[in-house]
Figure 1 (tube, rainbow, N blue to C red):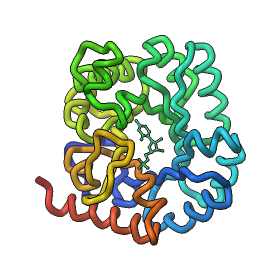
Figure 2: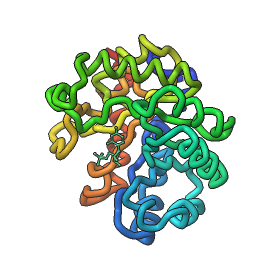
Figure 3: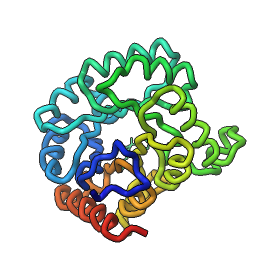
Figure 4: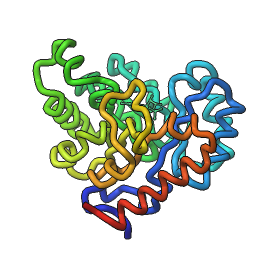
Length: 246
Ligand code: C5P
């Protein structure tokens, strides 16, 4: 089985299932068309704030016929009661993954975990991949970025959250910290691609070799001349990384 021993035991074993495509587009037709186009080479469809703020649950409904698990990236961050009730609503939608901010604190995370039940995997956002160490320090966080990410990760694990959103650069530290949680990495850039607003980036192969379970890829697929081929290339890069572990 091509699963790195650095990944979680819950990680999917086919390369395509390790790719979540971020459908960051402005209308449902485009989202559905992009999802259908790349679906042979990805395993998860991510609906983010742009689509959800505009279309709400219709975004989830429009993508259901594509037949892939849906990852609702709402990054919930509020008082425990509000987050718990919002997680319960997302659960009714039948999505497979939902994000909450780890910095919402232990009570918020526990309320989220209690509401999620079995079918919905919650992912705790540690430190956004767009944040630099200097920016984090400027926000008044005295700990180094990796240490802060570790603390957030522990808080998620202790609350019963199923996985973490992290940059690939912290994956090894977080794996050591939390063991078998699902580690999901945005900030993925095939080599040579611009990092845009992301600060802590890695190539698909680097993320996989470090032990990431699921790679979130948005603009490198969405903005490619041929999005299906861009997804296929990432799939092949994952297979090559498995064939030549470092
Ligand atoms: O276009 P790009 O590949 O940078 O897209 C990354 C996606 O992952 C976006 O939808 C963004 O909202 C999401 N994300 C992220 N960093 C996090 C959590 C989610 O970039 N920490």
